[in-house]
Amino acid sequence: MIPGIDLLGLAAKALNIDAMCQAWPQGYAVGCFDGEETFGEVLPNLRKLLKTGKVPACRVHAHWSDQHKIIPIDTLKKRLGKYNALTLEFPDIKFYVSHSCEYLANSLAEVKARVVLVKQMCPKARVVQSPLKDAPTLPNEIIEKHGPYAKCGPFGIASYDGGTDGKGEGLYDIDARQWARNNEHAQIVFAWGPRCNGREGKVFVPRPERTAYPSADYLRGLARLLKPIIPAPPVSFDVIPFKRPLLWKTFAEDLEGDNFRDNRPVVFLPEQTKFVELITYKAQKIGSLAYFGKFESLHRYYSGVDGGIGLYAYQIAKKALDISGHEWFYIRQGKKIYGPVNAFRRGYFQTEI
Image (cartoon, rainbow, N blue to C red; front, top):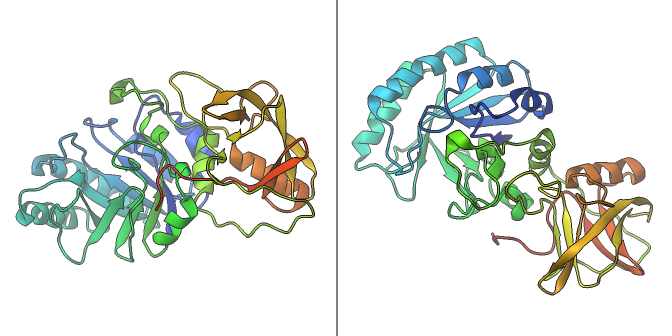
């Protein structure tokens, strides 16, 4: 399994490609869209990223249609030449070409014509079929599956693209480690969050107008979700475990517009205090989360408000690791200690898998 990030909006002009190149984790594949029907011509930004030497594999969706139509043959021909040139320019990178992302097709013949064309015009690339539901596919070719219920074997690629039925929650909202285990034999496993498509909140923004692309820390936080974690070490204090309705949410709600709470952690607890402390398994203080307000019957404490530590969850875990030797940590509120937590959501999940 090659871990990856499905940065589908890689072509977007509003994306900070220099920040992405600097933050891209070594050994992570990239996934992207190409074409004016999505975010534009991807080659300039894709080439910059591939030149970093960090990317072992690349999957390009050559086409997307909001109606899930399969790519016209003439359009595919125009795009395959440049993909073939990339395979020659970067011979050490594995290239995968998906002719149509989440396509519906009337016949197997339509699909076969496009698969054959990819093989003819881009012979060094692996062909990917990305069907929607029960759309026809050719046997013995790579199949890509999306969302929380994806389970792929050696002839598969898994991406969290779109979340549950296109609702748009990120990989951080489910049991990311279980999802990765479900796809551990796939060729590539892509982490994804709405900002990979330039989206935030629940308001639909036309693609050309989107500006909410990943920051370097958002990217690193996504990447962390595909790495394993060792079990929590024993502690010398009593701990209240996270169970519903208690929640450790590593990426807080992503509201429209600039908001420092966005995508940094929040914890939901039954009691109200001015702040809660983050401590290592040895009870060493890491920092604080500050009170923000009530949500239903619980009280919220955020990293990204005044008095909070201001870090992403993966950064807090790294700080715990630096201080104590373990990235697990705990939340202390008065005499009560909740946990353990880390860079992964705890308590319950947006979608159970």
